[in-house]
Image (tube, rainbow, N blue to C red; front, side, top):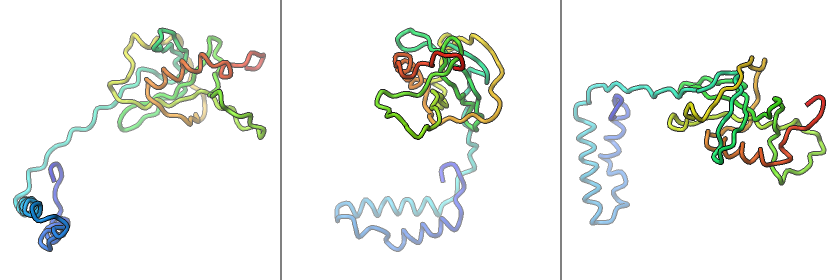
Length: 191
């Protein structure tokens, strides 16, 4: 009613509920008078003239400081730098949100690893440290916190990601994975 238009059907059903007494029987005697006055004021407002239509401003889009294919360094809270690769940038009506993965200097991917992970004998797919960053405009990193070190082609095909988080949580998760031996990329010919 404050920003939109009040439809007559909704107005009529609301006025009928007020006229029938609604929930007045549930209020104690001293409070019942106050409740009745509030409902009478609402009834008068509903039956009175409507406000002129108000133009509602669209929310500002959240910018993405990266492009798909960028390899960048993100400054962590302790001053270290985490190297991440931008796999894709998802467009949304509220903004553009990057999908990133943690990599080492040679471009090898870190695994999403927790110390209490049990061995999976079935052989599930590898869980890479990939994250979709969904955050407000105030939390987008400043230019001095992100240093793009390379631009490459984004991966072909769809990118699967399970974990969504904000930039602050990404910094904490990167710091944890950099210190976790089980998350480190495996040394070998093919990885």
